[in-house]
Every structure is written in structure tokens, then in C-alpha cells.
Amino acid sequence: MSKILVIGAGGVGSVAVHKMAMNPDIFSHISLASRTKSKCDAIAASVKERTGVVIDTYGLDADDVAATTALLNQIKPSLVVNLALPYQDLNIMDACLAAGVHYMDTANYEPLDVAKFEYHWQWAYQDRYKDAGLMALLGSGFDPGVTSVFAMWLKKHKLKTIRQLDILDCNGGDHGQHFATNFNPEINIREVTAECRHFENGSFVETPPLSLHQSFTCPDEVGTYEIYRMYHEELESLAINIKGLKRIRFFMTFSENYLTHLRVLENVGMTRIDEVEFNGQKIVPLQFLKALLPDPASLGPRTKGKTWIGCQVTGLKDGKQKTVTIYNTCDHQACYQEVQSQAISYTTGVPAFIGAKMILEKKWTGDGVFNMEQMDPDPFMDDLQKYGLPWKIIEGPVVQL
Ligand SMILES: NC(=O)c1ccc[n+]([C@@H]2O[C@H](COP(=O)([O-])OP(=O)(O)OC[C@H]3O[C@@H](n4cnc5c(N)ncnc54)[C@H](OP(=O)(O)O)[C@@H]3O)[C@@H](O)[C@H]2O)c1
Image (cartoon, rainbow, N blue to C red; front, side, top):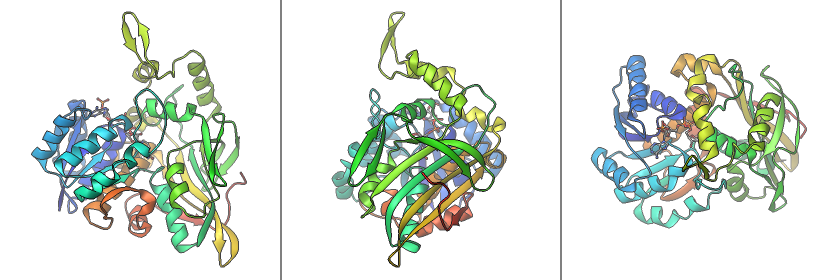
């Protein structure tokens, strides 16, 4: 029985809070705080209607460390689940240290003015969390998150040594909009337009964004899509934490339509993240673009199709090279029926709920800052099967990349 505070009332926060409320034996008291209180109230109303559970809501600017610390001291939760934006990570980690509360998130800290997708800012909290006897769990979404746990489960049960790891993320959903992103547009576009990096033979190799791609037919009749190599934050921690790894890459599918829109937006400067002068005030073009694009949470009722996310892993088993693929398929409409969200928010919100559950149940413990792959994969994998993200295994590769 534990009190929890979720910060961030977006698409992911909504799914996580619904799932927590469906499990009141573990999440005995849920509070939800976000910049716009009315969004918290709308989620609370949906949770009440679907589960009968009442959750407390608060308006909070999580960049204000003193205000967040005061709220933590008032609520006294066991854990803060940070589902706001990556810009808030360090401020919320500071507030958790000040109030003596465990911390968890789904995305690495990002400075506002430069896209980095690097962990060093958060890893620098290691000693402070350790000395305070607190745990900070980083990246409990799908990727990062489930894919890191998938890899470690394969290492524990199927392949003694992992040599090559390809993370494959395919969204076969169609929302019928000309252009929309499936999670926060700012973060999504920053990721996709960043230089590509992948790890090979001991170091990261940089290549132009989306320069390597090919056709990929997803298993389970999800569809055939063009899949593109890009950088993703978990490559950094997995390259360190999987000993003996020779190569790790991340691939994601995009439609030609999505990429054409993105190219035009980039060419006209709309994806810039630096400030520009406009009518006597400073604006960041990408933040302005976000205000124009559909809210990812609004895509739920109209998105049809499935997601397919997995790891294709090559390693050694009994001295012989072997490839195994592990994955989850998720149906957008089924997610909407269950918690009123499309599958991208669902596939992030459910692992956030399970990560929080691992910490509250003390199945995952430790003092300091941890990435997902540093934890025992088994209890998390069991819960994926139980709580809406069942996984399957294919003995062999699904694509030659
Ligand atoms: N690991 C993964 O697989 C994965 C996948 C997808 C997303 N993510 C991460 O999940 C997080 C949430 O994504 P999302 O799609 O739910 O984003 P979203 O819909 O934009 O929601 C973000 C929420 O955070 C709130 N917020 C922003 N700044 C705040 C502040 N200073 N103080 C308090 N609240 C603040 C926003 O408030 P307003 O409503 O007022 O704007 C919004 O409610 C992001 O960090 C994203 O990168 C991870």
C-alpha cells in the first residue's frame, strides 16, 4: 500500500494513472500534478468513471524546485513518477532529493536549447541519491524501458553473450491527419531530426539523420513499412551495461508522407529549437509548431492499426551464434477501448506503471541512479504479460539489416 505522485498530465501520464487506479492494492493513494490543473482534473474524471477511484490533482510548475519540494512534503509519497517533459527531469530529481522521495521517469534530461539525448546530467546524481538512500530509475517507458528489459531477459535466459542488438520500432497506426506526432511533438521532432549515432566496435559512429533505411515487414500482419536507422537515448546506457556488445542500433518506421512534411518544416526553419525574434517577442519555432499540431492525446479515437516494437538480438548460445527476436504488438483501438489513449501513449504509460509497481513492491531496489537494464528483468517481464503488453519470441531474425 503506497502513495504515489505522478507529474505530467499528458498522453503517457493519463495511461499510467488509469493503470495505477486499476490496481488499488498496490497504488493505495494517487496524486496527479501538472502545469495545467484542468488536464489533471479531466484525467481524474475519466479514472473515477472507469474505476471508481478518486485521485487528488494539483497545478504545479515542476521547474520550480521549491514548489515541487513543498508539494512532496505535503503529500509525502513513496515515489514520484515523472511523466512531464525531459526538460523537467533535473528539477524533479532535485526536489525528490530535498524531500527524500524515490524518483522514476521515461525519458532522459534534455536542455531546452540543444538536442543531446545524453544521460550524463542524470548519472551525475549517482552519489547524491546513493548517500540519501534513494533510488532514481531512468527510462521506464517502452524504448527506453521495455526494450532494455527485453535485451537483458534474452541475455539471462536465451543467449549468454549479446554481440549485436537492433531495436526495431514500428508504428503501423493511421490517424488520418496530414501530419501529427504520436507523442509530444517537440521531443519527437528533436529525436527524428538529430544526427544518427550507433555503436560499433567500441565507439559511436555518426551518420546523417535517417540516411540508412530499408523495407521491413512486421510479423503478426502489422504491415510493411520503410524502417530508418536513428539515434535513441538507450543506446548510450546499453552500450555500457551489456558487456561484450559489439554493435547496437535503433530503427524506427516512418511514412513517406510524415518525412515529406518534416523535410518541408525543417527547410523553412519550423523545427528550430533556438529563440527567434517575432513581433517584439522571442519564440522558439518548434514550440510554436507544437501549438499548431494535433495534441497526441486527441489522436486516440481516430488511430487504427498496430504498433510492433522489439529487439533482434544476436549472441552466443553454447558457443554457437544465434539470433532471437522478442517483441510486443499493440492495437491502437484496443488501447483506446481500455484507457482512452492510442498505443504510443499506452506502450509508454504501461511500462511506467509497471516500473513504479516494481519499486513500490520492492522487487527493484537500490540506492543511486539506475537504468532499466541494471534491474532483474524477470518480474517486469511477468507484469508485461499480465498488464496489457504481452511479448512473443521468434527464434531467428525478422529482418536482414
Ligand atoms: N520511453 C518511451 O518509450 C517514451 C515514449 C513516448 C514518450 N516518452 C516521454 O514521456 C513523457 C510524456 O510524454 P507525453 O507524450 O505524455 O507528453 P505530453 O502529452 O506533451 O505531456 C506532457 C505533460 O507534462 C506537462 N508539463 C510540461 N511542462 C511542465 C512543467 N514545467 N511542470 C509541470 N508539468 C509540465 C504538460 O503540461 P501542459 O499540459 O500544461 O502542457 C503535459 O501535461 C515525455 O518525457 C516523453 O519524452 C517516453
